[in-house]
Image (cartoon, rainbow, N blue to C red):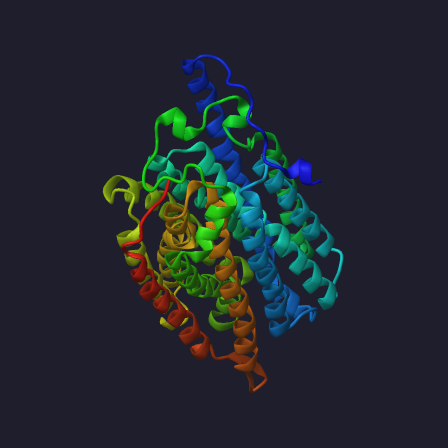
Amino acid sequence: MLKYFKKSNPRPLVGTSEEQISIYNKLKWQVFISATLGYSFYYVCRLSLNVIKKPLVEANILNESELGLMGSALFFSYAAGKLFNGFLADKSNIGRFMSTGLLLSALINLILGFTSSFVVFTVLWGISGWFQSMGAAPGVISLSRWFSNKERGTYYGIWSASHSIGKAITYIGVAFFVSIGGWKWGFWGAGLIGLAGALIIALFLHDSPESKGLPSVADLKNDYVGKSTKGKSIGSLQREVLKNPFIWILAAASCLMYVSRYGIESWGIYYLEVQKGYSTIEASSIISVSAISGIIGTVVSGIVSDRFFKSSRNVPALLAGILNVSSISIFLFYPNGNPWIDTLAMILFGFAIGILITFVGGLMAVDIASKKTSGAALGLIGIASYIGAGVQDIISGYLIKGNKTIVEGEVVYDFSTIAIFWIGAAFLSVVLTLFVWNAKHQD
């Protein structure tokens, strides 16, 4: 098994320089498209629970605090897996590694459609989190192995749109299945989509240029910038990642950003249903626009930072952080019953989060670390991010249940405390991001 997942050995160089460039251009697009689509399907398998929370509560299968615990089980195992699998992916065949994780996560979704036990739900959802953690690092490593430093921000931004593509598929497609076939189809629909994604990754996510008989992308494009890391082992460079204070600060900033992000993504549909009276389809549709604007945010972020800020992410990250705080405030504090304002808030939220996921949630750390340790840098950011997401799910679940009362036979919710929790985390994330303004980059 270890040999199967081991990084592919370099093959002898093939063809002339012109032929190598032609082969490289063809393969890099296969890598990029499969990594982007594949990771979007990872998200479908991860977000399926968000669509079916209210049906599960209405069917008396789970309550709000149990949903919070179930969601946190995925986040905590995902957080640990992000660190472990991030370090492991630097030394792995990324196509085999990433396709295996999605395959197993899809199978768990299919199984969950056949049970109604809280214990089974929580255990399997937690195990799924570990397999989910096998997706992000290989995707980012594919960009480091196949794209040059000068274009990495642009393609990282576009790849990050996979988060929002996955959200859109879930909140529109999976929600449609649920509205017709019930909550079980939330898991079954996501599982089938995940199986298709695993096949795409297995066929088209190639390990590295060297494994195809091509020079490295640095040699192919004469692309060496920043502090040289030649002669250093991957292990020693990974230890440098762990000692870098700027990456730890980014990890804390991302942790808090993920509290605000998953506060809305995990509970936004439920909030709109119980607080503002929308149906499941209406609430899912409003939240789904954040996925569409998120795609725009992620794509624009990389292009703008590469072309107009000389590959610096600081100013766009600051502006996006302020927009994130503002959009969540509008969503939570504007009076009930105005779908246009709620939709506008989600458009702004999605755009801001799209940028923040790209920069604070990964690229700024990848920029600071060596290209050889993109997985380790992303893993460190990832474990902090999803600890934040997991803690958020537990706290949010208990706050929602604890502030639920029955008035004249009707259930009434008070979201004022949870609003302070989500918005405060978003604000502190902005403050921490300012402390990495002058961090240096490596090759």
